[in-house]
Amino acid sequence: MEGFLNKIGINCDMGEGFGKWKMGPDEELVKLIDYANVACGFHAGDPTIMLKTIRLAKEHGVKIGAHPGLQDMFGFGRRKIEIHPDDMYAMILYQVGALKAMLDAEGVPLSHIKPHGELFFYMQRDLDIMDAVLRACAVFGVPVFGSKGTEHQKAMCEKYRLIFVEEAYVDLQYNKQKKLMPASESKIATVDDIYSRTISIGLEDSVVDNEGNVFSIGFNGQPFLFCIHSDMPNALDNAKACRKGIDTGEIQLDQWELYNDGRVVVVLFEKTMAIDGELGRLNEELPFSQRKLDAL
Figure 1: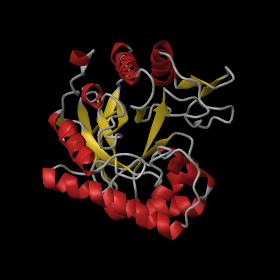
Figure 2: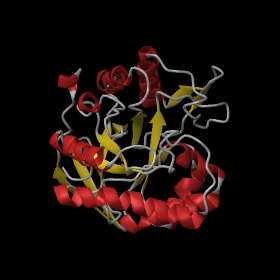
Figure 3: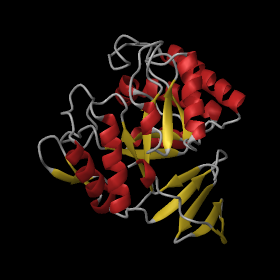
Figure 4: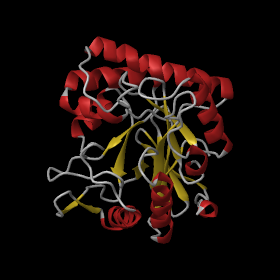
């Protein structure tokens, strides 16, 4: 179903190789995820890999979003680079526009946009950069994915009439300020870590920071996504552990559907409530999504 989003789903960065160099087991990961964030050629990816990844995700019914990053192929988009906001605006248009052209050629809609790596952290440090990125995203009018706890980004998405979909990360750590830590500073997660974090966040709305303190992540029963990185060690096992945690923990209580015009449909106990402005009414019955257990 178009735009379908579980209360608990998985998104994963994909297509992050270059030429003959491969990054991540995309062919296996795609069977376990709901949303693919496809690299757009700046931090990783090239035209051939982008198109191949689109076709792979399309084959498996996975929604496809753009994953723009800093122009830093050597550093995988994870090094600090100073960029003027005007240049940043153009860079986001360029990357997302390229991916969207390929999606159009394949007859697939652009699902969302998710900034990559250091670009995400740059946005949190510099509100002018955040504004430039989200102003470019507004041209495409699709939801923006980002970490829970980024209130400035959430507010600025509202300014540009963009839906902000919040994420929890199970293969990265959070610091004592309850903020996401970069991959370079996070301790590598084990499969057991991934599973326990999935259960803890999904059922208890809590996570342990890098100093061992438990804190509430703050979803409060609202829909969100887990993020898995394809370039992490044991990425496939990580994705399996996260999917297993979602399915065996039965942490899917309700569902929603996103539309590019901003309307939201919330599904409760297999019923839908159409919310469009001030008008809400009970709509048709919809089945819960099929679990991807066959890949485990």
